[in-house]
Image (cartoon, rainbow, N blue to C red; front, side, top):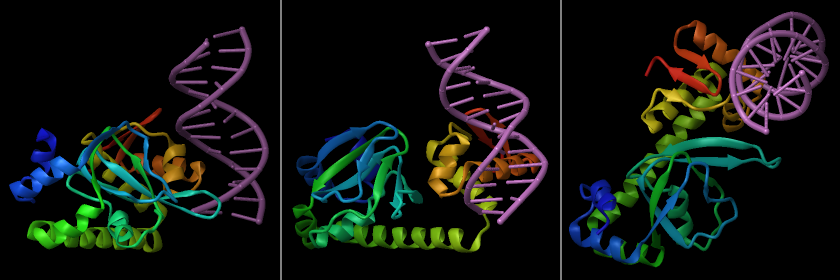
Length: 210
DNA sequence: ACATTAAGTGATT
DNA sequence: AATCACTTAATGT
C-alpha cells in the first residue's frame, strides 16, 4: 500500500476500497509545469490527486489560456468524471502547479466501485459539487470583480497551494493565467504593494495578507 | 562588456 | 483594461 495514498484518502475511503485503488491504480509523478492532461486528450484513466497541486486551464480559439481553478490533495478532476460516462475528449488542460503525484484509475473501475462502495459514491458526488461551486466562484470573480481583486485572489490561492507566502512567478506568467496583459498586471501589483498587501521582487511576490 | 529578460511608466484608445 | 513605445533594472554569458 502506498503510504501517501493511505494518508491522503484513508479518512474518505474504507480499507477495502483503498486496497482496490492501490491494486488497480497506477502511481505516477509529475514535475512542476508538466502537462498532466491536455485539451483533446482521450480520457482512459481518472486521476486522484495524492500530493501536490494542479491548475486547470481553459483555452480559447486563439490559444490563450484562462485559469479555472486549482486542485489540491484529495481532489479529483470533474472533467474526467463527466468524460468517463461517455467516450469524450478533454476540454480542459491540467498542468502540475507543484511536484505532483497521482493515482491513475482505469475508468472501468468507476462503475463497479460506484455500485460497490458507498464512500466512492459520496466522493464522486461531493467532488462534482465542489468543482461546480469552485467554478461558480471563478465565474463570479471574472464577471463581477475587477482585475485587482482577481489578481489578489490568484496570489492568495497560489500562496495557499504552495504553502508559502513567497510566490515564484513573473508578471507575464500571471498575465497568461488570467488572460490579461503584462502591463496591466504590473500596474495592479504596484498598487497592491502600495496598499501593503504584497511585496514585490524580481521573479517573486510575497503575499502579506492571507 | 554585452545581450537578454523582467519590470516600471506615460500616452493613447 | 488593452496596447504601444520606451526606460530602467536585474541577470546570464
